[in-house]
Image (cartoon, rainbow, N blue to C red; front, top):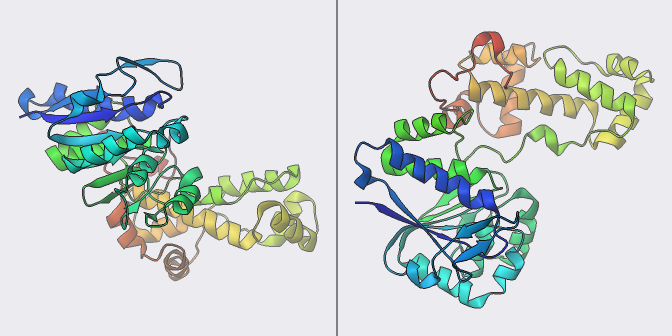
Length: 336
């Protein structure tokens, strides 16, 4: 029996929030040997029959009333007009009622605000785009907002972060319905580099640090990123910036927001996470490639930063890639 997916769209909705997950579900229909086991996708809207998106494209939709009855997956996308949608009480109330007759409810990006506005996320973990997590926590204090993962699954509710993560979330839903093999086949068909798990962070830890405004410091940062495996004593870094060690450390902290030593450690841990997620290299080799001369030092630094051992991190977050896309040893640590 076809699983009914109802997508709630509204004027100003973001196109990719809608089309990303929809393409995943539609692709499943093309791969299943029994088409009756796939998905029936419906878009509903108070602005039917044509809904203008934030990009100016129009999406065909049926009236909200067409979305009545049992629903397998209710999908609520975000959009630049989100705050106007939050003021639309009939829409918010309809989402609340529809959720009660849905097996599961999913949101993309700011769509989680609409779920929270309907009171559906009270007492639950949820996420949204990293830029709006603080606002969500302020506006909905009963929601446990987690700004880290790309999507969060709590009971029947699945909330995803920014735009493209709706695709990752949809693949996870497909995996729950049809197994990992089909989800990976769909990822390969859609030419995704890899299928990300929900616990993947929304952005690299290195991005927490800012890029320096001053050219000498910025040049040193770029060199550091390209030579993570090398020793990086402050005097050598200072020499590259043509500064005294003391002045370099002071300026670096002011420009980047952390000491050179802390920046180096965070950069090395970020590279280690990348290798643990995308390769089968032994932990000792990961440590060496990330500039840790002794594995004991690596284990302590990684444990402090992540709260997990490298082995536990790999077990939890290693990327399951479609066949043919595993990073080989010769190019480990590099991504296209």
